[in-house]
Image (cartoon, rainbow, N blue to C red; front, side, top):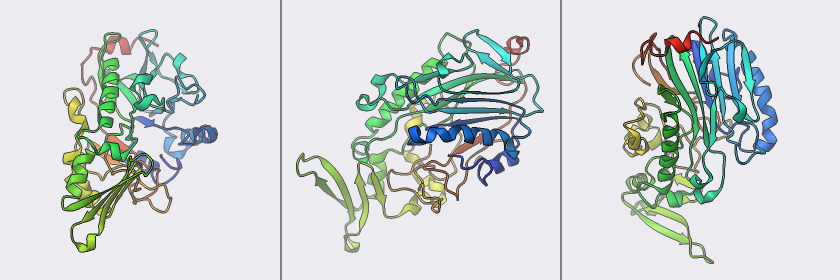
Length: 369
C-alpha cells in the first residue's frame, strides 16, 4: 500500500520529515492473492532498501511473515525499521535473552519469524475469529532503546466487518466486540509481567469502523427503508433507503459487501469531521490508548483503480483508522493517488533524550553489545 518505493507518495514524506528512526508497519503483505503475489515481495523490499530515499539509513531491520503455508502462524504482517546514519548507540531488545543488543548493519528476516528472538509474533487464537474462519489476523511486537528511551512498537491487524447488513443491526456492532476482544488480548500481552513495562506505540490496521447503525440512521433520517429477502431462505440480502419525496430517490443501498451512498462528499467535507462522533471504538481503551485528533478524511475503503485515487469504493462505509504543531504531524499519505484500498497514515514526532522513564533503561541500553 506504499506504491512504488521511488514514487511520489512515500519518498516525499521521508524527505519532508527526515526521520532519524523510521518504523513502517504493513499488513496483508503480498496482497490479497498472496500465494501468487508473494514472489514480488522480495523485489519490493530490495528496491525500498536501495532507493534514494533510504541512502542515509545505514541500519535496517525487516521482518516479513511470508510463510503462507502455515495456517497456524501466518499473519502477512511486514515490519520495517530504518535507522539514520547520524543516530548513535541504538539497541533492540532480545525477548529470549531479555537483553538489549546494539543494532548494526541491515538484516531481513522472513518465513518463520517464530524463531526470531528479536520480536514477538502471534496470530490470534482461533476462537477469536468470527465463525472460526482462521484468517490472517495477529500482531508483531519489537522493543527499542534510543537516547535512553525504551519503547515497544506493535504492528497489529484486527478483524474487519464481514457483512454490512450484520454490522448495522446493533450499536455497537458484533464486529466491534470482536475487535475489542482482540485488542484487549494484545494489550494484556504487552503489559504483562514477563518483561519490564515501557511505553508502547500500536499502529497498523485496526479495522475500526464508524458505528454503522448510528451512521445509517443519521444519513437516512428522512428515508424509508425497503427490505429485500432471498426467496429460498427468507434471509435479508439487501436494504434500500429512499428519500420520502424527491421522486423517492435512492439514498443508500446496503448489502453484505455493498455500501452505496449517493453522496460521497459527506465523507470528504471538512475532512469528514461531522462523522467523528460515530468513531467510538477506541473509547473502550481510553485509559490505555491515546490517539491524536484526526483531521484527515476517512482512510478506507478507497478505489483500487489507479485512475481513481480520491474515490471511495462502495463496499464499506468510509472510516478513519494533522496536528497543528510542527513537531507533531498526524496525517495520511497519497491523498490524490491510488495506494490500494487504504490510505497509509503516518505520525511524525520528536523524542527528547531520556523521555518517559529518565535513566531507567540506561544501564540496559548502553552496555549490551
